[in-house]
Image (cartoon, rainbow, N blue to C red):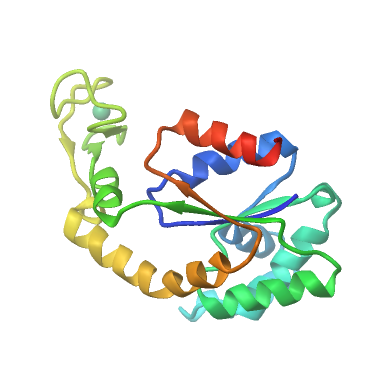
Length: 214
Ligand SMILES: [Zn+2]
């Protein structure tokens, strides 16, 4: 089962990635993790990528796609994979498809975690961090016992600059500009599946289970 996950950060797709990976006993492939792994192990691709990273440039798509190819061909991905965090734009989506085709593989499901932007902002902006020990909380999902006070050490909780609604909206804006065309692209495929990411974790899980094991 070769699965691609689509959706903005904050939609809970990471949690469901773990569920799907366990369901099929397949690995989660995340381009960020592969990149770090290749660089750390000083592989040929890792060294190419490192030169770009060192000079503050983005690692080109073809290098990332080659890394994903290597990972997909690894024997622990023989029964499939869950790709999370790639593709992020249309040309990456096409490059991914071509690469898979070149090794006789194809996508079985592209799952889109659909959520209103307003709700994503509310979710992401609910995070609070302890100024003393760094413990993280969430106003809705994991609130501290006492408002604004850390359960562990009594320190004050604050909101990181990155978690302020204005910054999140900017980040999502960039994300949407790049990914909206991919959603459009995948939605025309018969393997496309949209889930309502605003449902609770358990009902999304049940929907996915039903989708895969009818
Ligand atoms: Zn604390």
